[in-house]
Length: 478
Image (cartoon, rainbow, N blue to C red; front, side, top):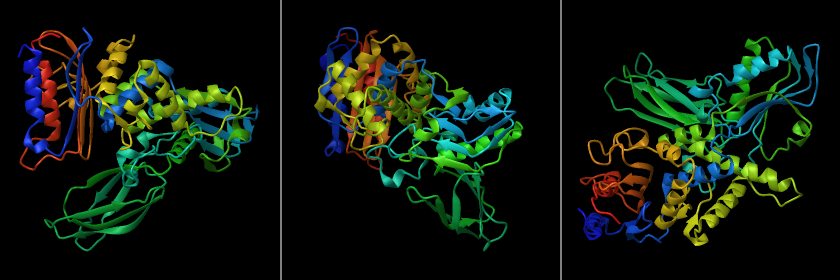
């Protein structure tokens, strides 16, 4: 395949199959070397991007905060330490770090406790307040579906996040039929009450396990059956109140370090006002996240929604602090500040306002809409930045890692296609970079909407990947 006409014919043959009759394809392929468009199909049609929208968050954060930005988590007080005692509340103040409690930041609480100990603090005669009001607005993204909010992929976007805001639930059948199965939580102090019962049935009978938690509710209902002698089963759900869990972890770390907190643990969430607590507060201790580029890499490889939503909101909080410093402005949520900053960045790129509607940072919202042309314009912008190679390496790499680890192996696309996947019900997208067989660098957006593959046909992901493979095998030049 050495001509653009041949490439066009092959892509057209792929997308014009009868099984796509009710579906919508949108595709744009542009050479980063010549700037020419190699292929376009409904490239100016608005499409749902799913998780490929995370590329907009990456561009916004890198252009606003910089690749080395580190999100702080602080311990604040308005009082003074006297003879090892703090008379007043101690505030655990989150500023968006989504990595607390993960492998890179597992010791965040002991580190903060140790800093306090080194300052001579031995007793807090007051409350420990876990404050996540740095992000203003609801803890879920605009357009997120209510039915998703108990799920591990739609956890609260809290400024004080911990353990990726997930609670692990293990269900173990009882020793004999008729007895209730046991459910355990990790973390054990998750603010989640268990109601209902899963009953153990005879071994080798079908199981029927049901877990339900209403949005915003801390009660988890469990019901159904599980066969005896079956292996324990594991589930991941969203943590109802991440700030409360973070506060509990810090309190334990303080106790372990020999610092007594005499008051109670309480939380402060938007729209509660923390002005009186932090307006004149001093920072007693601080823990910083990994650099932004590292968090982006972890978030893009796994398509981790919490990471990208917290990053998106961090931009909004930054913009809000700048603009409100000059005077009183009408209230807008942190997410609205972020969306406003993104609109300005897209305008600076030359993207028409009607070509991209992104209102949150993950792509979970079905109200997110973008054209393939706008996606490729974004890729072109990113490819021209000083951090271009770092960001491309942060994307999933076909056959190597991330959400593309098991795809396109032993093909010309392996270790060649660097692209963000996007998938939710009826939406399948792949957006990123590939070098053609002729050595030409290409940026592409392949977007398939309104499609459910037939039971006897290839997966939608395979159909999208097939077009990326055609680009990798293209021997012509633009």
